Length: 348
Image (tube, rainbow, N blue to C red):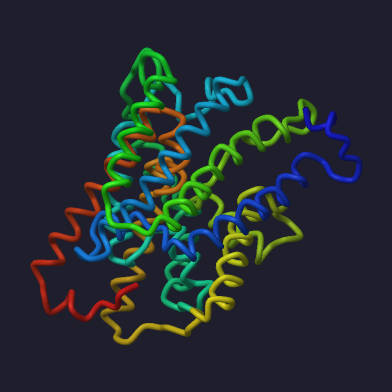
């Protein structure tokens, strides 16, 4: 398909970098304006939880509708994607999801939110992202890889890795349920509209990599918005660019940071922030490590397995998102039992 669009100076993998950059710019800008964050929606203060949930669920509803429309139109097929694999690594997904959820509460944001915060001058977020990227890479290809491999061997066999029944019906039910909850929450209509645009970036990513940039002779992976593997790829590409080529994920992370930075400056929200105590530093770096390991084990973060994965109707993605939410809630309750420690933690 890629060749039919008339690209002459770019290969499909090269075009994927620019495509990821464009998606990232849009995501970073929209996430900066809407404060898109699952952590705030799940464990935020009472004042911020409802509007944050409205934004996140509106984005999910739009992502589900757009993705399933693309499937219906024959633009993308998840039959061979890992989200639809019949052998589900249930132990890795559950443990990884719980770890990721715990980590994002300790760091006050998941990987995508921290990327946006980093672009706004938050040095805590930068430090966490470095730890996140290193531990994610160590779990995929380094010293922690044997742990991931062993847990991945504990699988649950299903007839299909997707939800059974008609995809359009499932997609419609999920979209209606999430949008109904979002509509009743307290959120600005402008933010809901922008959240819907953010959600539509997910099917744009799936169609872009799976249809527009599809090339039999120089294939790229079918992918959309995600931050676990892209964060690791971005770190190691930045320090070894002559040996490690850039890819879609590198463009996505770079574009997200750039888009968030531009909006933070234009809206006069850029402000330097850093750690205030050694204990705070330890908390955040521990959370970053938990997210790095957990994101790989679960098969994605709140964006990769959540916002992008759930619209595929893959059982593994839905299970991962549920485990992340449970891990976040359990950790928040544990921290709430220590009021002095919780009071010392900054807002984000």
